[in-house]
Length: 328
Length: 306
Image 1: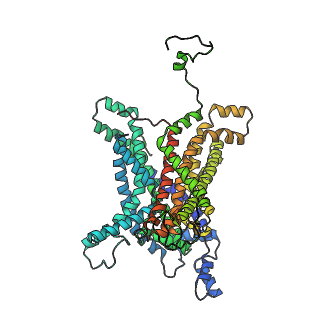
Image 2: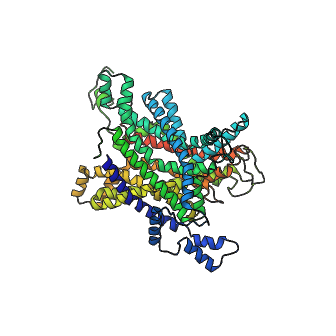
Image 3: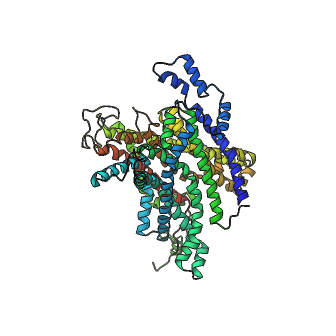
């Protein structure tokens, strides 16, 4: 198991390098920050200033060299220069990551728990009223655009706050300002209050697709011979469901969850924009609008690491869940 | 029905024995079509989707307001004159939603077509030749699969601007890898079948085998994937447009309309709910159609015995 983990980690490195190199080519060619600098500043900067700016953001170097300098710099904790003066990209990235990780983790856990619960129920009671209702909402949430639902929830939150006169549900930002003087408990509830609506938004789409997946996977297992055998030899239904069926049905779900992290991160960009969080979403949007190559790359690098890391965890979980799979 | 007449005698019905025991021969296509036609949710969805499609593409020619022309009425609630109301600048929302639906559908459909075409051909070639060709092509596919769709689309769209076909090309360029994986695995098993061997024995070229034998026989997964891609396309495009990186004014899309209406949810709700409802309606019907097609092509998932 340990040997397998190490081997997988080593294999991930060339994948990461190839992937980031392609992304680097895309990002470098997706905009011209130097031209942007030359036309957007007032008064217009001198030729020398433009040249100095190009040198500062390494725009005067060939792409391959830039990539090499960037990737070796990252290993030493230097994420490269931003087009904005006095912005430390590494510091910016990790501050924002702390904000976003709470949202993404909360949304994933809630979506996963509810998806397994509803998916299994739906499969056990196939073609019942409850199954149809769950299926209908599953399809509805799958078709619902994240941004539309987020705006709707935000309005609902504002309306709720007005009706009850409470300030619990936060609709702007990840926390209230001037919190430092407050008690720890108040800070905690404030954080939770701000987390509720964005988490529901982000959890919804994954919840829908994972419920559908759990249902299908569970149905397939329930139709299999060994489940029928387990029932036939007299095991109680509940035991067959949990020990025989559910355990097998959940194995493919781990891969789906790990693969969906990319979609969730995309959804987080939209959710954070609407709820005005100062997280990674805002960072990406700002970086793309200001044509900030290294800031965009920092975002994409971290997301690539998360995706690869989660896929590794999913593969290792496979071995835990499925005794047929052994990694040596 | 007691007297059974001899077969062949004039004016007789089909003999009873034949009526009960002969099975009408149906081709594979007929079977799939029958199963699809009997899928009620899919058929209703198909009808609704086609209606929306017709409305979005023919409607603008018949409607007396243009999506980019001011009317003297500002911020009006839906009425007979303006079925979907007007916005604060006086644009007729009916015309705008029609145009937005058209743009979003164009992008979604082009995305699905481009992605499917590239992915299917790519996957078929890799699966057919195997070996080094397969290895190289699939490593490229894996590489594309690691690129986060939304973030990369955001980066590229900021450069290419708001032309609708660019948005479609960008999304297709990032989603074809899924299709190619599916098609490759199908082709890997198909290429060992007898009919491929027969075609080769008859002297068919590689190109002919791939395009006339392998791809048509992988049509099931390809079509199912294509419908899913229409939904992916429309949801990605509207999200991009919502953030300001997709379709740009004066043109409009459903995502852009929702974005422009997000501050007016309580004051002019029709501007927010109607384009949102259209996105949901399109994605929902597409998903149901995809589901019906999947059941039609692969009827193995039957009711479970309790």
